Length: 130
Image 1 (cartoon, rainbow, N blue to C red):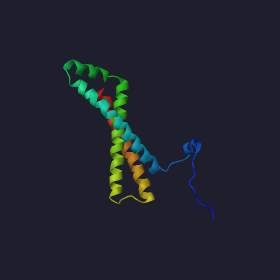
Image 2: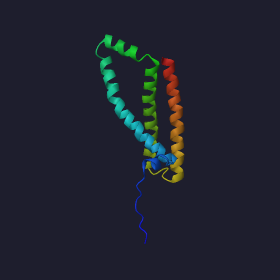
Image 3: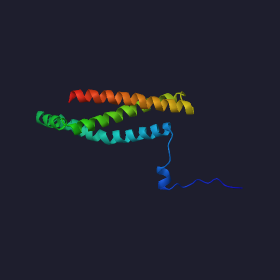
Image 4: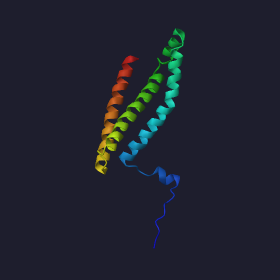
């Protein structure tokens, strides 16, 4: 009788493994949540500094005026948007909808599409504000 033991994968085989789309969306949801967790203290420090005085507000406003800050803010907003849309998908799945393999694939495609559209719209809006 042959025992089915778990296989320890080496790092090369892990990197070559192709995740299905629902798994990729799930991992990206976790990564976006981690990025938001790291961004919150930074954003709170910037907010606190901007509220100290008029001079500190102007200093923060000048720092946020460049293209690099546009990209930083856009990435943070993109993480918020993707995390929110994927979270709504998870809530819908918790209610019992889209739990099949086909439903999970369709839900993942919808998450990617809706997130991409919203991220591009927010990027265009931010670009106009520059």
